[in-house]
Amino acid sequence: MRAPFTRRDLRRRASRRAPRRDAGCSPLDPGGTPRRAIALPGASCLDLGIAEAMSTSRDIRVPAHGRGPGIDRKALWVVSELGLPTIVKTCVSCRSTRHHPTGKIRVNANHKLLDVWLLICCDLCGRTSKIPVHERINVRALDNERLVMFENNDPAMVRALTMDATLAHKAAYQLDWTGTWQLDTDMPFYDLQREDAAPLEVIIRFELPAPIRVEKLLTAGFGLSRPAVRGLVDSGRIRLPLPIDAKARDDFTFLVVTTPPLSPERT
Image (cartoon, rainbow, N blue to C red; front, side):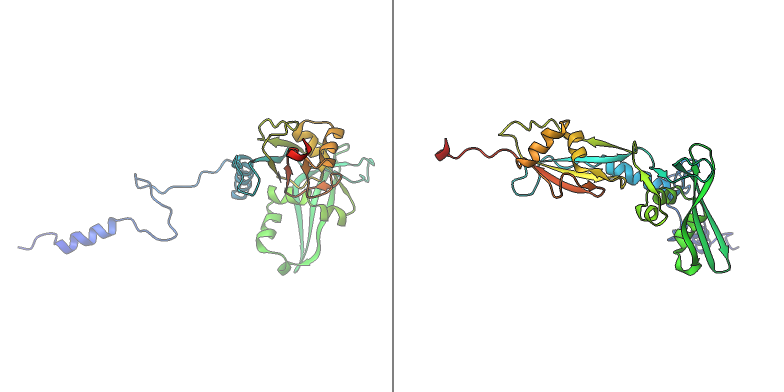
């Protein structure tokens, strides 16, 4: 009499029960259930990515000892984002000039041509206005991912359009960056009056493209008055890659050096 199950049958059943390891499947935890990426309610993957990138930029710590020649210490200053800039544009209803984005983007399709507008709201009367982003553009000229972000009112896209200086110039309005940023420093106490202090390299990183005067960054970072900062720059104690009166919106690095000691011949 034949056994109800042969070794071949058992091997077949075992292979059927074993989980498949396809390339597209989620990894399994020890309990055998697929792992899922946990997302916050109402947050898209792109939002989480931007938040993670911003968090990472804030957590960066520069090594205390630099590797460059003559650089003993480094410090990181971060221009961190507090909010979106105000859109300065005259309202056709109340003539007020203060607007903020509504968080929505309107897309109108006419056959193969698209119109895209950023919607803004007057702070005084609440009237909604449109800022043209694309006009009569062929749908094939737009990247598919960018088009999807327009259609879904993606917060990252709204943020980017609101801060876009090129778009502001094209649509003839201005951006008011007042109250949109703060300067965070991890720099330890640095006595600028000591002649034996180690040289310091300061790295300034921008989380948002706010145009800020270099002088204002220095006074905020060192806690000094404008005349004191200008005196340090004029004497060569602070060495800048751009004029002190210039407006910066991109990352840059400057150097703080000590007063060189007097030579034996001059003592």
